[in-house]
Each structure stands twice: as structure tokens, then as C-alpha cells.
Length: 352
Ligand code: ADP
Ligand code: MG
Image (cartoon, rainbow, N blue to C red):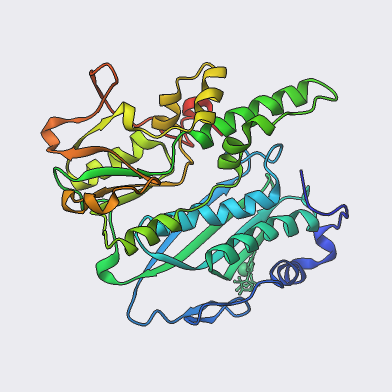
């Protein structure tokens, strides 16, 4: 386990309250509607005339993360970012988070300090206040649960169910990288376990390993859409893979869809790592997950506002439901999209 300090202090030396004080001392409240943060029975937020959005994620050691190759600082950063991504996917602005942790005896104060360094970085980077949480002992490794609170004007909110026939399906960034980064980390970790003195060489895979360990939420895309005065008709963040998440939009909007294989954005590093490991690059984009890109639909009349915007790619369009939910392959065949995303219960794709 990697912490950013060489010291090793037992949590029992601090006690629960001392530990909470220690972990949260560097955090400052920066948003004016946060009336009360850490230190009372509950936080107080004054949302004025905005709608509030609330989202939670639970991360379990051994299910969602492996501390053999996940530095705790990165884990703290990612735990916050994945929640902020859900807030942006509502076209809302994240403003507060709470962080709850369960820790077993193997963790030292310095490990938790590293975790909170990452949490703090994310809070500062995205301008959100840490306003509370809970702390408990755990028997089986680490548990982290983050709740994010965001705000939006009512007319700004974008749901999964707003798409109509003909709307253009768009995706930000590129897909499959986080999944391939995970495969590389697992491979190198296995070699490291099996061979004394083995030095993992991750330099060649810097981009995709970064996609896995230090994802960013696409605040920039939300801002860009606002500047261009485009309100997506539906939106979701890509956490389970393009296929599964697009099917959510179709299901909730009661539409079908056509996407085109040759339009799906896959980075060169993702493609070459996939080929090296004998995985079809397309599969990493369709079924990989954890990319935290935004997948959304735009009315055709707004499409000209997106010309020259390289971070956003049109990949297809919504159809009537009766036309099915399909991908058109480079050979011109139509194949049904299938939800094979990350499933914590089924161990599909050997993830985790
Ligand atoms: P309670 O007994 O009401 O649950 P706690 O003693 O657990 O209160 O928490 C005291 C304060 O510290 C509260 O404001 C709580 O939200 C905050 N807090 C507790 N644990 C954490 C944590 N891991 N991270 C951030 N804030 C925390
Ligand atoms: Mg408590």
C-alpha cells in the first residue's frame, strides 16, 4: 500500500475524533451556500431557488479497487470524481461532497492522510466543499462512500429520458482507455507478484493507466455546451461502457438507435494495448467502462453549433424504438447492442 509518508501511526493513537480532525483540517469551505460544513450533527446548505441533485457511490476494496496498484491518493481523487461525473451528467454543477470511510486495522493514519490528500485535490480542482461524512472500523479492508450534491436551474437539468427520434448521439473524449489501463495494471501486478525484483514498465501506457487511476469528470464539456447554448435532450456519463450506457438512454427515452463503428472514438494507445493483449479495441469502448466521458443526445437543429469542436464526436442518431438498438459495423452489418458492462455481482469481463 502506498502512502505519501514514511511514518506509520496506528489509528488508535488518535481515536475517532482526533482522526477526523486530522484528516479534515486542511479543508476550507468556499461556496457561499454552504452554511455549515463539518462539525455539527448535519451540514446546512441554502440552495436559494435552485434544484439540488444528490448522488452516491460506494467503493469496496477488492470489488471496486485493488490497493496493490492503486495509490491511496489517486483513490481519494477518483472516489470524488466519479460522483462529480454523475452530477455533471445531470447538467448540474457539483457544490458539496460527504465522504464516509470504513477502515480495517492494516491501515495507518498516514494511509488515510494520503487518501484525503487526493480527496482535497479533487475538491479544490472542482470547487466543491467537503461538508461531512462518517468514520468507522471495518473487518474486511477499506470502504469508501462519497455523496455529491449539486445544483442547477430547473430548466437546465438533463435527464436520461429526454431523447427523441432523429436526435444526434454524441460522446466526449475517447473510450476504452480506462479498461485497457486496468488490464495493463493487472498484468504488471501479476508479473510483480510472481517475479522477485520485477520492475513494472508503465511508461509506454501512461495515458491509459492515467485514465484508470486518475480519471477526470467532464466539467469542461458541460461548460462548453452552455457557452454554445446547447441543452442536450438526454445525457448519461459513461461508467459501464458505451453499449450499456447508450441502452440506458434508449430505454429511458423509449427510442431505438444506430451508432457507427467507425465513429466511435478510441485512442491510439488504447488500440495498441488492446491488440497487444489480444482484445478487440472496439470491445473496450463498448463494454469497458470507467471512462467517465459524457454520452448525450442533441437536437439536429443544434448540430451546426458543434462544428469544429474536436472533443465531442457525433456517433449516430436515435431512431424509433421499433427499429432496434444497433451498431453499424465497418462492413455495413447491423449488430444489436448488448449491455455487458461492469457488473459487480456477475464478474463479467473479469474486471475488478
Ligand atoms: P455523528 O456522531 O453525528 O455521526 P461524527 O462524530 O461521526 O458525528 O462526525 C463529526 C463531524 O465530522 C460531522 O460533521 C461529520 O459529518 C464529520 N465527519 C465524520 N467522519 C468524517 C469523514 N470521514 N470525512 C469527513 N467528515 C467526517
Ligand atoms: Mg458519525
